Amino acid sequence: MSNYLGVENKGNPVLLAKDPISSAVSSITFDGVFNDAFSEYWVTLYDITVSSASGVQVFFKWRNGGSDITGTYYRDQINASMNSANSGQFGNATYTDYNAITDFSFGTSATREALNSIMYLFPRTANMKFAIHDNLFTADSSNTYMSYLFNVLDDTTKVDGFSIYASSGNIASGEVCIYGYKK
Image 1 (cartoon, rainbow, N blue to C red):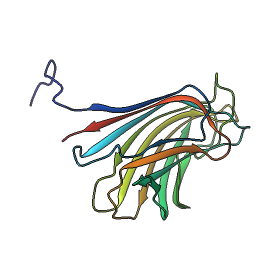
Image 2: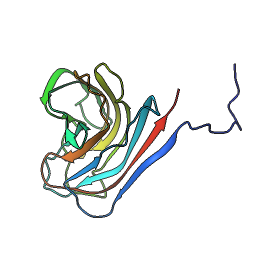
Image 3: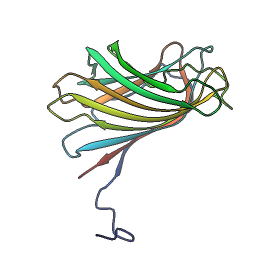
Image 4: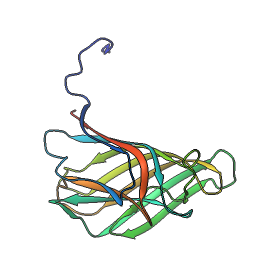
């Protein structure tokens, strides 16, 4: 068993890009950020808020060469609420050309309703594209949720980017960081 305390980083993980969202934007898009130098990527979403009325979800889509990857996005999600009975597993869902990160919508109370997430992305495989999202957020209803979301795009394209956006309106604030991880 190895002891990693005090051992140098050796490139694991490396901060590749950062977007502190200081004013409302329609989407947060990173093109050309993924390449074969890393085998997987971690993306953190910190305090993502929306500027539209309540009822807004946050969506994710893969991109390549500056364009969205279209197709059927599959997802399975486990939700647990700390203060409601809305816990459960939602499976076999599909979306056309995007995937929902938040299954329950949230609104504009920036002091309460924000999304915090760690996404594990595998964009450079020659097989299906996999993403795993660990999310925490407070919904319109003031219910606080954690969710564990698995999503898949059945496409063999080695993608080089992604986009995050609100189902309506803009993303008002927050921060996105992308880290590359070598095995």
